Image 1: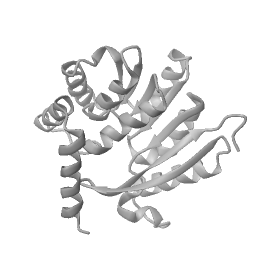
Image 2: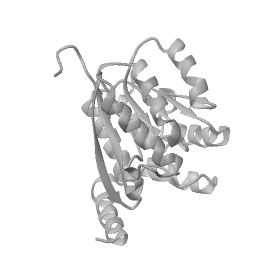
Image 3: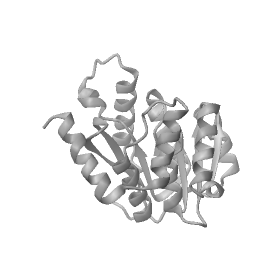
Image 4: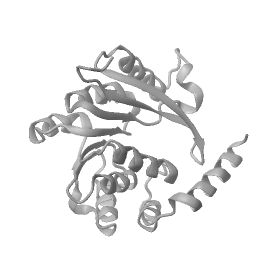
Length: 225
């Protein structure tokens, strides 16, 4: 199949199962503000929502807000009593995200922290003593392994950790790649493999966003094999 065929299937899926005015409005606002079009796809956004619902997540940490598109789906999933803490490097992006969340009626569920995620995560650990049920990592790819380590610190047995964009159009297998994103993805997967407190896999995806995939990990408990 070609990328155009993948995109056509995506359009059918979105029209049939995902069409949503609030999240669509966020994408329009992001484009109008000049944000890069690197959000998760609509089908992937709803999949995040369903994963969070399945995990019964009430506390979510997102590393990489952009314009808040994925944040909208996660904030819906946690429910009216839930909470999302999301970290965004660029103040302009955070401003757009806040407007999108407020327009969707979800602003009260979400705290946006602005600045480099690795600088903000110690503050999150200090201010949020209760562990997170789900961590979604979709920020600068070179730091993926560092973000996974922080996710481990901030979660509990049974929590879910998702790392987006790890397949890199197949470049993931290129051990000698000089692409920082590829090396960041490989470092994260090597950590997921080596870390005894995690059980993980990678799911490849195709669609309007091309060929990529995400890592999915669960924090083990005492009775897990």
